[in-house]
Structure formats: structure tokens, C-alpha cells
Image 1 (tube, helix red, strand yellow):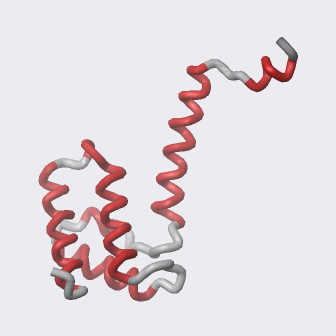
Image 2 (tube, helix red, strand yellow):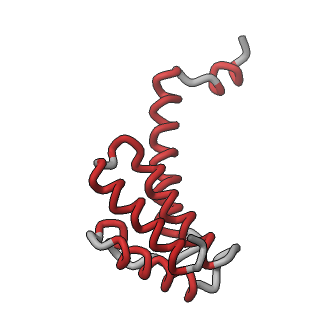
Image 3 (cartoon, rainbow, N blue to C red):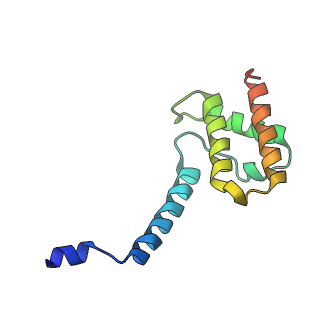
Length: 111
């Protein structure tokens, strides 16, 4: 085995640790620096689904960096947040965010 082959192959535990770290940073980077929206602080922690939807709508419509329609950008960011939370998102919170999706659809006339 050549020296370069030894250097290139890291132990699997090391590779797993690096993957988790990179994955965490990727999610954080998307949330904080996405080109689609500049979100209001704590938007996903609000208790009122209509307020969440209006905040996402404001963010989407005022963004000059988004790559799709305001509706698609707002819905994508909400779906992204819910998917990233996965099983860690309590059912009560998921219900509020699902209602926010319905409100977004209503705001954009897509119900």
C-alpha cells in the first residue's frame, strides 16, 4: 500500500463524525443564508398560524434574491423547516405549521 493510499483513507468513525458536522453546518447555512428569503427572527416559533404565514409572505415578497415566485419561496422555506425538524417537531407544533401552510395557500389564492 502506498503512502498516499494510507493518507486518503480515514477510519470510518472519523468519516461519520465529519459527515454529521458537515450536515449540521449545511442546514444552518441554508437557514441563515438562503437566497430565497430573509426571515423574521423566531417566525417558526410564533403561535398564530396566520401570523407565521403573513411573515413568510412579507419576507418572500420583499426579497430580491429569491429564485421563484413569492408563494413558492415562502412555502418552500416552511416545508424545509418542518422537514429538517422531522420527528423532533412536537405534534402540536406541526399542527400550527400545517395551519400556516393552509393560510399561505389562502393568502395567495391557492386554496
